[in-house]
Length: 259
Image 1 (tube, rainbow, N blue to C red):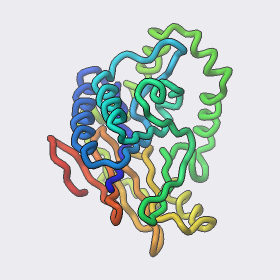
Image 2 (image 1 turned 90 degrees about the vertical axis):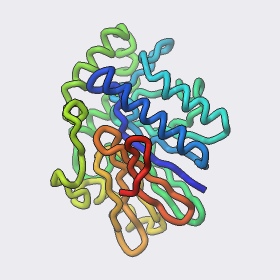
Image 3 (image 1 turned 60 degrees about the horizontal axis):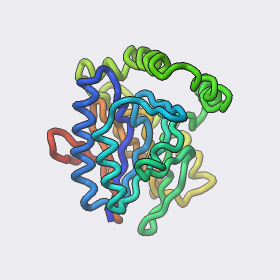
Image 4 (image 1 turned 135 degrees about the horizontal axis):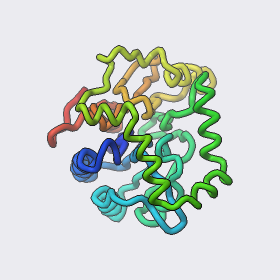
């Protein structure tokens, strides 16, 4: 048994060449892990912007889609959680690639271990501004209105703002987002959310999130652990559960290493 988890690839930024380089590395990693994977979980923000029109999907990412279709055709389940950057994913991945889409958090159990899985955006206390914005984006009439914008205009407008983001600058400057940058993940909203959730359901062994881009594998109490998957912008990190233990890994230059 090997269950793989990865998140926050943000394909599309800061430019086509940089995005393609990361996409090829991601495909290489998928080709490696699919040979012993029982299941693969992509935990959100695979794309920096994604919107499905009724008859149109964004241009690009053909290598990734081909590899994912190949994996699901082999019978290996692949699951995609919607993140805050690909919140407008609907039925394309299920119909064309065979990927099961999750819009909310789920709880899974493997070999007696219980996992709470979510992208992580909008969870935890505070962050009222984003939570309001998320409701705006998920409001179906707003999605209908956006569909009336020509794809060339809507996509270019979204990518214009994406390419001005902090993460786009990180890719451009080849920086690494890590705890060395002074981020203490144990003092953030998602960690507080997990700690509070245990008060009502102490059976959870692992909380696995994306969203914050900081690789972390921290104890919550004597039994549970908080795992943040990091990203594929500066860390190229992922997690693997072998039935007994969950490890946080990184994949660079064709080699997997323990973090």
